[in-house]
Length: 66
Length: 148
Image 1 (cartoon, each protein chain N blue to C red):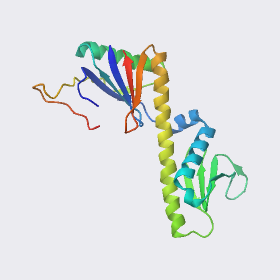
Image 2: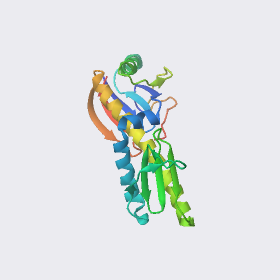
Image 3: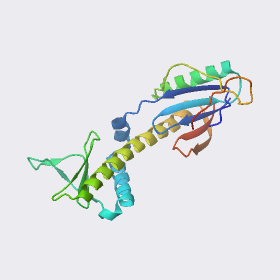
Image 4: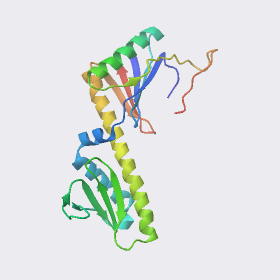
């Protein structure tokens, strides 16, 4: 499953899963953070996984400032 | 960052400056500070390492000390930055003190951030994931393509 992991210089870690469904993406993200914790990298995360959509889709788009 | 991902989550690795800098080591931090001072404050002269002394006893103190022109930069063993000017202090010295303090403090924060990025880049393959591409965004963020 293809994903992008963005690590900012202040330690924020964002995971963007580009394949599969929201549910499989959620599972992959949960597993990824758990596997990092096992490597002694504790990512503080509120457990929220969102779905981002293309602007052309007829729903409110979620946009990033960067 | 294009906003078309199927699932997105964000978390935070707590930035423990002292911990990250400790791992980098005094030598690496010293060299980075010397390079920064040479690049940005060449007008003040060549930065030189100097041994630190306690104010009252004169006994040798631990930490990093660098003299550049009339300005002394000290980084304590717990990574606190102190910048001061010696002797007769001019307005230019005061300005230099402020600028150097900001620059060195910013450098330490950046070094800690780079250390976190490096640790994560090492931990991801160790956790069994393949990194297929790695780029750096203009804001300094590291962007990894990963097979989850």
